[in-house]
Length: 143
Image (cartoon, rainbow, N blue to C red):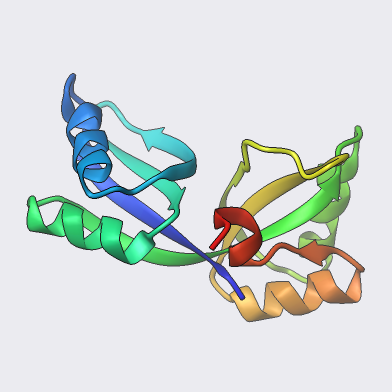
């Protein structure tokens, strides 16, 4: 099972992040992890939340441009070179990473990385062949 990510496009101005966070809080949406990619004028807030559909609907109702996207979460050793080893797996198979970010909570002695691929099923196949543990949605959001 893939992990569903909630993304929000917003202006890069003071107060806009608080507006998004307030809407999510009022809707009872808990943010599990997030990252922000920005330019001088706009940003994309990407989040894994406990109720992605609910967060999406709440933001759309308030006029925000939001989307839901499948991402792939994998466990890697929390040691030097482990991320490089995973990236090598993708490179050998010509899988392009659109973006990635780290999950903020460790799973024992393992780190969790989130990846977005154009072909997520091909990426899952490659990771399974290399022995990586793919983290299920339920393991991240605790449903």
